[in-house]
Length: 200
Image (cartoon, rainbow, N blue to C red; front, top):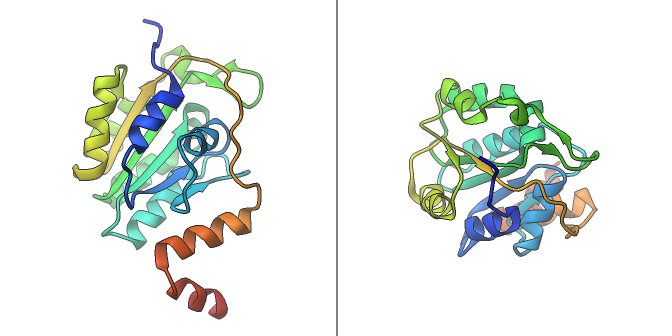
């Protein structure tokens, strides 16, 4: 069955009333998606770090166990970092959710088909890696239920959201990696971020 969900609508729904949710986005389309939903100092879009979004999210979740952490990434990026799912499953961070916006395409290199277009089931992989909850999402009702779980459910949570393979206008976050790191750290740690920066 062909996917009917629109990625930008999905991400807007997931980030609605996000409050203090910490959000990490994989490089490329998911970084544009979270920015289109509303740029925030508590968002960390990655540049040039393919396959690393879930591990960055894991580090945040372990360092900030009282905060909810959401990783929003693409199927191509997640396929490159499958080992991260095993590590997350072993660590069992209750405050971490990993959401894959799965259009079954490599959007940044010409919309070539990814392995999920040929039947690779990322939710099944996450389940085998011992995620507490692992689902495939195909409707907006399921997206809304997922949003509630991201804010209140016990993790780690994994969701593979099937979306249309559409090309959308770029909505770019700042290109400066140092700026992104510093603003995220200040938003998360407040004044103590400056003290830590002086020591490093």
